[in-house]
Length: 320
Ligand code: NAD
Image 1 (tube, rainbow, N blue to C red):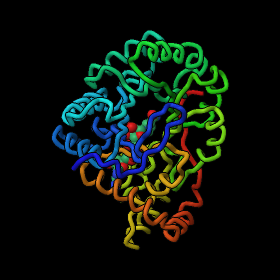
Image 2 (cartoon, rainbow, N blue to C red; image 1 turned 135 degrees about the horizontal axis):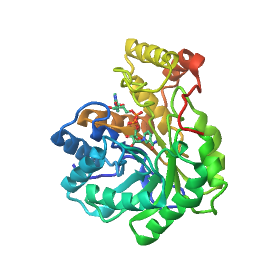
Image 3 (tube, protein in one colour; image 1 turned 180 degrees about the vertical axis):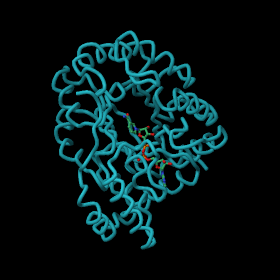
């Protein structure tokens, strides 16, 4: 199948990049959600690209660099021109720990490019900045990323993390236009939509918004989250009940959760972690169905009732 671009493309802030509304989260390629073979990874990425997904996000942290290496193999196997896909990776978070120093992140991009078998990435993001000193991010890491941008090794730069106040802290302290994108996760889901309140501010700063983990890292799946999932038992139980309700009524909680995230078009892309052709097919179909028929409001409303006791509850992250 040709890359027919059937999935909607959305502008990413002021970057000029047009991202597919469903983005490919490559953390599962690092075995983060269970083992995946080279063949399965290549088939999954090919299926994604051939279905119109043009955005792939990874990090040296995922699977202790395995995700980057595997994504590199998969993109090479596609055998298409480099400008046909958009790649984001990160720096500052590693299997060994956090290091947001200029020296480490400057070395990190070279290591990432080698693993990805690429000359440049499209987006380089400081990974989970709430685990570092935000003043170091502002005064040292972002300037280092700007120099990397000037060198041509990345086209755009960004920051990622869980608590939403990290974004205002950093964006209020760097010159306008310095940061091109932010990546927020688990805050635009059926159980937690707190990112919504920040969208006008992010727009005013001219920042593109990548929304990750629409399934809240597995909470909104029939199989449930991985063992390492940081949510409280109360959140997990409520999400399990919501998934069970959907199943009993012949609905898919994953589809509902993805469609809910996709329905806000101010989010440039929704990054879903995928580790099989079947998941790609389901998620692409969910995006196309949403375009055609809109949200399943009746099921969404029932699920919202079930999730109400834990609505907008999150979990601690970082050292701030
Ligand atoms: P997610 O919410 O996308 O959930 C992924 C899980 O859902 C995996 O177990 C996957 O196998 C499963 N899944 C996907 N499609 C499914 C379907 N149709 N049916 C059933 N199960 C399905 O969480 P995620 O993978 O953590 O997030 C997506 C991506 O966003 C990551 O891979 C990563 O690239 C990015 N991300 C970045 C950060 C950060 O920078 N701090 C944090 C979280 C996520």
